[in-house]
Image (cartoon, rainbow, N blue to C red; front, top):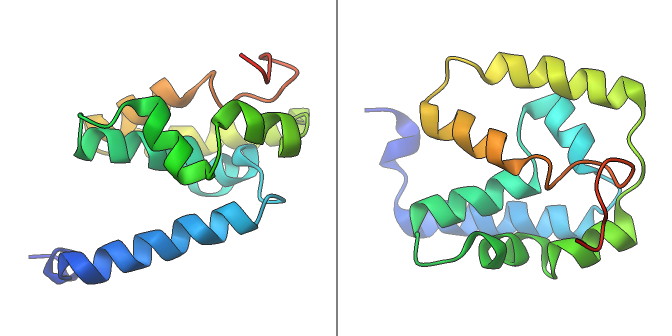
Length: 124
């Protein structure tokens, strides 16, 4: 059994909430950069909440992570992605291949919802 699986749920939940609050505070950490570095972003976290409890709608789960409507966050904080950021994200997503299918599916479904404003309407 992996040590992560040995964490009690209260400890894991506390750490998760701290991560989400940190991301709410760090608006400068753009989703495109998170995707480029780690292969996941705020949308992924929201999607994982939805997957853990399907009774929570995906939009509601994302609102939990963003601390506001996703469209509002995008309009306030999301900048236009550079070609370099998009290339890093694409390369990073390739590294997710071969992980479990649920992760790949969550990442696939995160886009275009987390695409830069130049690619999608931030008010959509």
